[in-house]
Image (cartoon, rainbow, N blue to C red):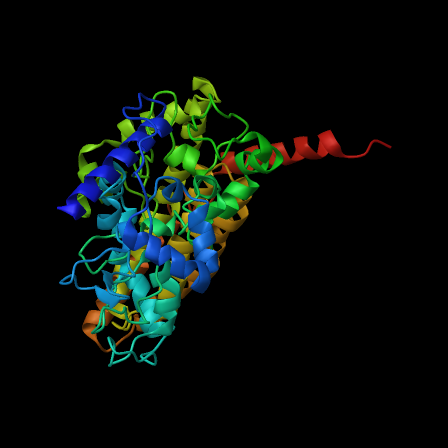
Length: 488
């Protein structure tokens, strides 16, 4: 009964806090737990000496001011899979979304409906084949992995996407799976996700969460360089120049009302506007999912994962983002931006992604069946997984250099100088094969190559550009020279 009363009290306290953040009515405003629980006081007295940094962070948090201490978050029941007896109390090192939901039910419900919560489903995927087999081995031996696991996956993929936390006898997590704050971590209680992936413990600073670097831990690098894109964009430049005007520590943080100097990642994808509430489902304002080789609408991806977002159309999501953008821009700006973005995706699809997939399908019978044992697989993987994503993400966030030089330029360079020549070599090598199946496959691959290269998008490569286009380009070059050449 005491535990149920505690949870009920915490829920009321946080409900008041959530209402305050959204700028709405605050029933019971100022409600906090009457005092720090006896168990948490004992924890604090010890950790003040043993873990002063943790104690100091907690001391500057809202949890401290609400008398929410260690046991309110780390409490475990004796029969919980991750429970261990510590100083006479059963606790868990792993605080899961299910634990946070005692006080933050709406936030956890929204997060659980998001792609973030499913991040650990990368386990066993094509990407993990790289980290576990191509890059790694089974050299990391732990109690939970006596057969070994790849340290490349443990220290790389799992730290962003999450892993399945393995609990050893006595309640301690296995070192291959802990520490881990991967966004889609699979917790011992069955819940998915890690709130501390964004809300770094034990201060849980809202100011830190609103900083773009908070997302940059994972959203960076060759295949999804959102932080690099943001930094080069006008939004990122404005943020750095006007960071003192961003009101990052405000309780109520509504764009266009509390600040307007610049948006951060949180502004566009999560935070409140004058018409939208805060959300922890970062997909509700995104109208393209650019993860696959060919982009799909987000409701298609949500349906594949069994998420409720399958019923939220991309048009509705774009309308949500429109409410964010109109806090600073006008309708013409918004519509024109999305015209540019959609056309970049259409260009990438029509010229490279769809023909590339067709060519790889035609080449498959001629390749070794072992994943990534063929050089052409690496070439194609980097075209769509790295360079193609960079182009699409760059356009989505107005990062021109990454869209072009790190995106479409790299796609085109490798498509024409490595991908096409590699496929041509494969077709020629097998054209006279004594294996009838391979000979047939080689002919089919060559036919597909001829079809692709003879299309309007690629015929320039065969020196078959339309004469009218040749003349137009020549005229434009002459005009350019005439405009800028030095007069003598």
